[in-house]
Length: 274
Image 1: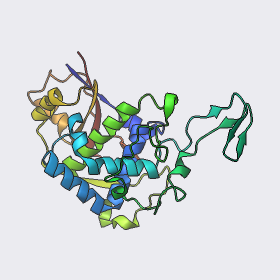
Image 2: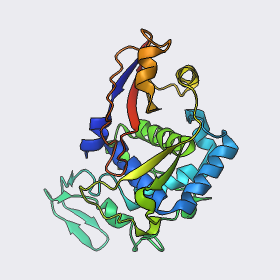
Image 3: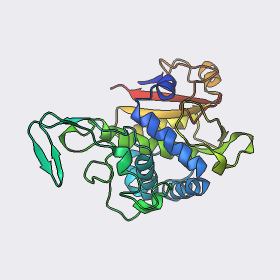
């Protein structure tokens, strides 16, 4: 049985949701840099085919998509300051003396800037192509989830979900700004105000095939699905009546992030029950 639960409010309002924050910042950068979006689309089309959802097994075959996410997390770490540490004894590190009892916080935002990276203010996923740097805490110039014994315990799930969700968004839809705004005129400064985008539907899997895909998706209990306008009427009038349990449908969907704001999108969290 598949249970659909909306997470629109979570993605739209919970700033502590690292997956939602990472996705919205990445989508903002891709819309701001359409040439990068086209490269990611091309890789997805050539690797898995157009208008298909991303499976976990596809991730390793998508180096450019991985580079896009790494670059976004470098520029926009979900947690700019990592969890604090407290010195139990006096510690000498190079020329620095850390007294006993001092609280230390790692500035992940600063690590992603010019002292470590060339052209640090540019969104350039190409810097990670051919690089061994990952986001799993093994390379200290890119630790968005922390490192060591206190690394974020949810990072493996977050990494998988970010790749599969972002890849599905890119591969299933075309994106452009409202009112023919030029991408380079976008304001990517962090703020609480939404930046509207217009979502243009491509030919996407039918609802039947979309549900059948779940049996082939990654072995995760928590999956996701993007549904477009018309799902409500399908559930009410099509053969799915009585087969989809717990579906929460609203005609005016909440924004799924501060960069994605449209009445035509329904964003659902999917939990497969054994």
